[in-house]
Length: 167
Image (cartoon, rainbow, N blue to C red; front, side):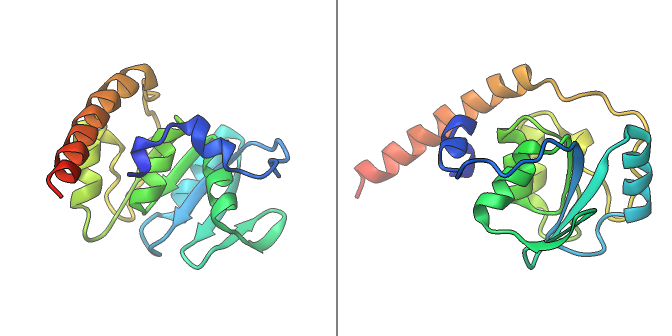
């Protein structure tokens, strides 16, 4: 259901943005020990971007210190990031919704993530746990992804209509 809602509708639900305009990489570490943080920091250094780490408990570590993040803040962090490293299906989904460049890494129960990546032709965006961040990544073509996602949405809505009509 997360992917059925367009980015504009997600953004409408946000309070006035608290975004300060600083460019950053977001590491959404729902699961710890999935990303090699030294490799991520090297990637950020080369890209000249700050690193913000959002832990599964809702605490975000950044150059500005630690703070608790609510659901609105979660969406804002992803929608404003230059690049997202995520160990979560929803981190992946919102990265796609907001057309963010990303890498996803999950140790276990990764079938849903891998299925979505395969459906969109983004298998190269799966990073093995604790893997080194690739130095050269081609940017995701979100025009192509939008067309593929639109077809998936039609299929999903048809399925929902069929299931609800049978109730």
